[in-house]
Amino acid sequence: MKKFTLIFTIALLGCCLITNAQQSQKKYQVYGAAFYNLENLFDTINNNGKYDLEFSPQGARQWNAEKYWSKIANMAKAISHFTTQSTPKGPAVIGVSEIENITVLQDLVNHPLLKDWKLQIVHHNSPDRRGVDVAMLYNPRFFRVLNVTNATVKVEGYESFRTRDQMCVTGLMGGDKVSVIVNHWPSRSGGEERSRYLRAAAALRTKLTVDSLLKDDPNQGIIIMGDLNDDPYNESVAKVLGAKKQKKNVKQGELFNPCWNMLDKGIGSLAYYGGWNFFDQIIISDYFLSDRDSGKLSYFKTSVLNFDFLINPKGQYKGYPLRTFSGGAFLNGFSDHFPVEAYFVKKVK
Image 1 (tube, one colour):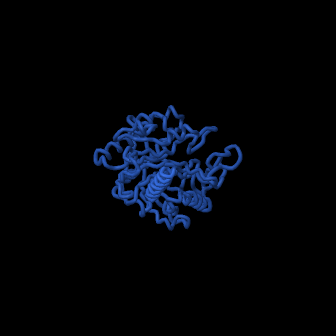
Image 2 (image 1 turned 180 degrees about the horizontal axis):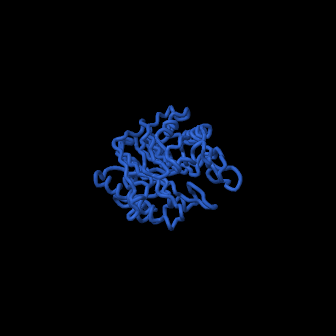
Image 3 (image 1 turned 90 degrees about the vertical axis):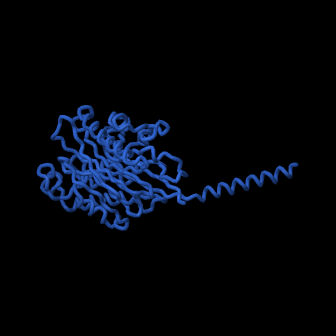
């Protein structure tokens, strides 16, 4: 009897090993969707009057060719590290903000550290008073653009208000239809409470875009990314946009914000007065919350890409993102924000 039991146990173990081996042979393609606030990526030409003077050789920052090309090299270095073992050629899409024009992006994607990726650019000139825009870079190996629209943020009673337009790029990622909305919501200039209504207006504009997309085609994934200048729990994100903290609470047509739980754990994308904020968020629609063996793109995880070289190593702001300027002094750093990336998987047939 003991001999039979031993033989049965070995046979059962063998079946388990075969099953596990079969499962391990399942292959998944990983796609990344990243966002990075490039912190004032301006050229050296003053073509926007007083708003652009600061970033010119005659301005307070003495923004010259040497500093500009150093900034381009630093941004290229940072983005070149947006790789993993599963994404050796980087993300499928990269949303960016605080860029002056398409020329600075052309210089960026043609830098030797990125040139082999053959990144393509989607850009639109916004009405923002400072002249900064949002844009999207994409790798044509992993993403194919189908349509691009841009929505202007309007604030009732403030017809003269100007901020960044919101860019929506619809395309195919892994064969799935995906719409990426790139944002840079109004800042907290003047204080969080006094400027709250501006971000509520921006959130409403994003929500209207989401509703329109889903009405047109419910069978698509939506990725909202950007510097929202609010945290996941703030009213603009949690209530106006309606991005939920827990996956289990997300119903059809609703949004999930994985950054909320990350912030609860002390993880953030920028630091302010000793505390962390998570302004640079990636929010996804319920489309991506299906099982990874469903045949659709499935959400895997989100990471803050806080590489060591992006962190200030010393001084008052030790541990903060290493920015380009601090207190008017040129630090030759990167950005006051860390990049963020979400990963999606799809089973290879």
